[in-house]
Image 1 (tube, rainbow, N blue to C red):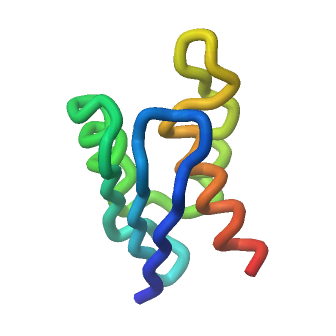
Image 2: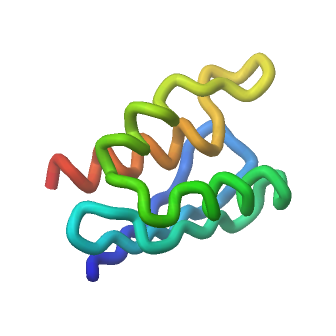
Length: 83
């Protein structure tokens, strides 16, 4: 299993921890942010393929911000894939 810790930019959450095994998300946890929303997103991601998660979450905006917590999670997964 691989573990990612990502520091999001431009959102309320301060940290995202993601566990990945065999190309699938095992768990995701946001520190900070809108608790109900981030917990919901994290639960929905369990078992999802990394590429599918990137496709679904990329580009989501929060209000007037150019990004969101889900978009930042997609950025973390993109960074993971490029390493």
